Length: 114
Image (cartoon, one colour):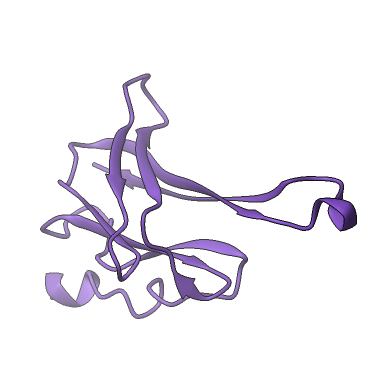
C-alpha cells in the first residue's frame, strides 16, 4: 500500500527539542504532493520563520519558504537527490545574565529522493 508507506505517524510528531522541524507530509521517495514541514520552538509553532531546502549532493541556490500561523511551510516536491531542510531561530535574552543579546537555535532534517 503506497499510501500506507507515506504515513507520517512515526516521523511527524515533535520529540521535544528546542527547535525542531516536523514533517507534515512524508519526504520519502514514492510519496506524492508538496513537502510540508512544521517548525516548533519549545513545542509551539513558529510563524514567520524561513525554512531553507537545499541539496547536499550538489551546490544550488536554496529554495526558501516562510512559515504560516500554524508554523507550516510548503515546498514543491523537488527532483531526486540528497536534500535537507533547515532553519535558525533567535530570541532575545537578558544580556546581563547571558552575556549575549540573542539565543539562536538551529534545526535540520535530511532525506533522499530517488
